[in-house]
Amino acid sequence: MAVLIEAINVIVRNETIEERYLGGMVQFRRERPNDTFSSDGLLTRLGFMAPPDVKAFVDRLQERGLELVSDGRFVDIVIVDQHQGATAECEWLGYGRHVRGFSYVFLAGTDPKGLVAVPNGWSLDSSLTKHHDFVSNENMASEMLFLRHEWSSDVYLHRRTGREVRLVRAGGGLPKRLVN
Image (cartoon, rainbow, N blue to C red):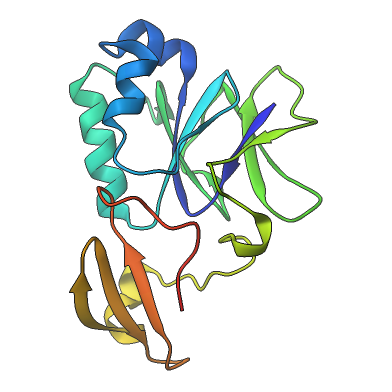
């Protein structure tokens, strides 16, 4: 099995959650900051669209005793980018691309062939794999004009396309794609 990778992802082994996260998987799921949770029984994934949301979640995991990096390698928590894979070395995680175009990760030493765990309601046709427009942090101000805040979304005008784009922030449930 494997788990879907879209946008910026935080990956943790299920056994680590059970052993080191107070309350185990039940509490982890209760405290998750958004609705992008998926698990293949070995790995758990949450996805984010903004680096500050990733940092806030990773900080919370570290407060609960999980370790991020040691000697330049991921330990308990792995940050995985949809396009580039893991952002540092990790000996227990494999990365691949499905024939249908989406990315996934799997526990090293297991067979990633077969089913890929995805969040409830996810479909390839409405996914970030099919519909995304990446804007780096460095280019955010020049490419995106902030228009307003609505509920848990920040609404921007994409200067190049002229379309409104919603960036849903952690805490309000993340969308499966940017909404135009």
